[in-house]
Length: 296
Image (tube, rainbow, N blue to C red; front, side, top):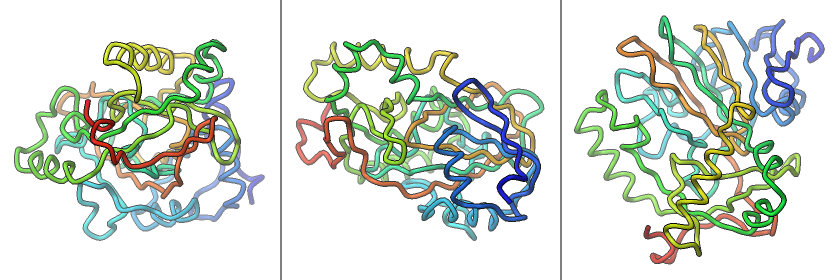
């Protein structure tokens, strides 16, 4: 069954497309996981799977989580987060999904239902290769560092604030977000399956690096962001309706471009429950209990 899929790399080291079969025909789960861990980002074009089939696919990869901490899921499928560009479902900012939780998702499964005539691509960056390409002194410097991650609901749903976000929804998200405690993650996360280190910070949710001054933290994060989002480290996917994309959330960061104006864009995402990140020095993610750590 697995040999019927055609695997085509998208770059020399990151991303691949899987063609030749339909998801609904069945697949070898172990093989699919191995391809995800190898390539970190997979595109399965022209699949047109239903909501139930999307949840079933995510379940093959692990345990689906609720759609989102501050946004209701689909009324019939609470695991599915519906992202509609004209209803506040934009996230034009580099981010790794849900790192404001102490156990961020292992993977995400996205289905493209409606795509704009032009624009609306998503970029994914390979944070393992980005870490590998840091200079040795900088790798040593960041290996033992920790950073605070917080949910920023209004900035997350568009940059700047999304005009499609209704005021009542924004206030509800803001109030729900205040109930979520900040978390502390290692700046470098070791992939639990492959052992590869990956940069684990992003502008979407990372507030600051512990133990550094404002100037040092802001400067180092800006350097890491500029480094990890270089074109050499990312793929850009131009959607066709029916596409399914799966990415390893432990070793990627993504950015949904907001360049399609008033055109309709509708996606649905399911995330797969993850484990607690661990850094190269053994430090583990935790809730920020000390307010002096959490405050920026």
